[in-house]
View 1: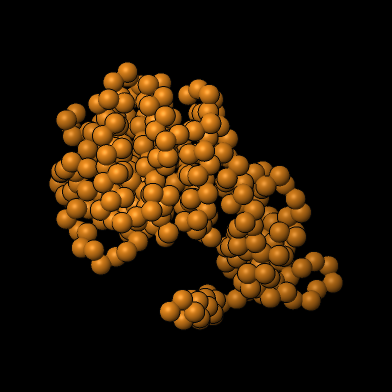
View 2: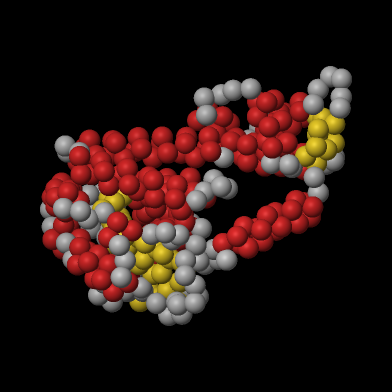
Length: 318
């Protein structure tokens, strides 16, 4: 997404904010947070000026930005932004005001009215609308206030910048990510807010939920992930037919791959490679006496097959 800040800026906030004058930093933060959701959901990013209503699924920041001059115009009254995903919507409210006692009263209490207005204006089911609150950290009074509102039926997700960055990075790395997968995590966070006994326990549980959710997604994507990484290793080898041992050698030099293996609890790498390449039809097995040899499928052939599948699904949805 050209022109949008990287989600890693959520982790190095000071360096990101120091690019802008002090009075511009709050709106620059709103821009960063809303664009992070666009990256996480893999949706087009629009501003108040560029949103023309022609795209159903998108993330809209209700402010505006001149990318060349780095000039921001804040959103008017209402939420900072909204994510119109497949099957549900997410209102986005963010603030740089951190762990201070007036965080709830000054920054967030009005977001409940924005939630009610959005449900009414869009004729949406309340269960299909979520309210995402993002801040560097939350004050205890903010937690207490939103816990009460969550128990009254509001779908509230409290995310600090670190957790939002982690979620977006997971979504970016999972090729088979679906909006329903993220909805599952959001529902668990909402349920925990309603049941939690303290802000400290809530924070710990959210981090644990995100870690477990990542493992679930990795297991869901296991053959796709190992198939693509093995295909990449075959490309680097520069040959159409590559042995499993050569693929394993190249994969062991990949830090991200090593991390995923640890997350999955290890396993038989040769089997992961074989199942990934064959089940995702990225290669054919070549008979050999000593080890598995794989003949790589041409990228154009893979693309043509994928497009035929897309057209077949689209025809069934009509």
